[in-house]
Amino acid sequence: RWAWDPFNNPPSQTVPPPLVSKAFPPGVRTPAARRAPRRGKDAGRRRVPGCRREDDHARVAGGAGALGISAEGLSYKAPEESAVRGPHSTVVRLDLERGGKPLEALPSVFIKRVVPSDLPERAPSKWLRDVASYRTEINFQQLYLGELSARGVRLPKVHSVTNDGMEGVSGVLSRAGTASDEEVMHAVMACKFIVLSENVGNAGAFEQVLYMDRPRMERTIRHLARLHAATYEDKAMLEKAKVDMFAQGCYWSPDQRNPAEVGTLPEVWGKLCEAFKGEDEELFSRPSV
Image 1 (tube, rainbow, N blue to C red):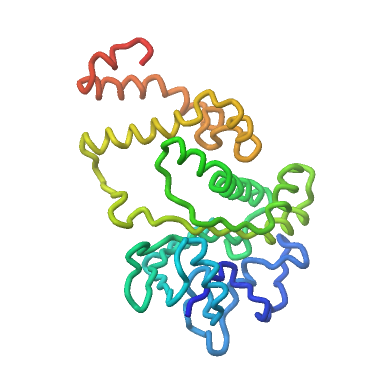
Image 2: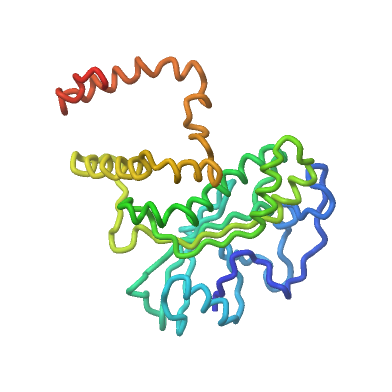
């Protein structure tokens, strides 16, 4: 039985001594240590991302509880072809079954697993930037997703969010520039995040197409407009979001872009308006546009 064990760190597991390098202070378990070759009966076996085989009904029941379904007879498969192992996380689809048959009420879910000690090595300054992004994503899902959904924004449902080490990460982020590399690495290597979320492909809830026809384009624009308008002039939420997430648009904020790129915006916008003015001449003739 596959148990819900996102962090691959059961109490009974024997952890080998940490590998030490100049980039990682003593006591910090490095990504290289987590990638050490398997030995014994596990040699050559590819582990499903974020899971380990264990007869532990309590863990299964806990995972089922997060999904709002009974754990009785519940099992799942994690298709290797659905796994995506990137520089920042591992994502895999879980196909849920009961009695060997797909679960009709909830055929599948997605798990996203962010464990820095499993990820490629990088400098402490880069880790600070990246864990700030991870924290922003987790805070959005825990603190804002429900409220935005209640305001009519269609967002993937998040069944459960688990974070470990958030306090340490927040501490070094609040002291960015003054925290030592050792403090940064200890905090980063101790944090772990996992999100169990809706598979938006279930029952055709969403579709992915290369080219959109007009009805699809209109639905997409309406969805984006609803997303951006949901917090319009909500000063209390926006002020809170500045603390819980990023205060500005980060990479996409104009002051973060190459000045030469920003300088070409009027020309590019003019070409865009010219290309689409046939769709709505009144709209594209407005001075404000």
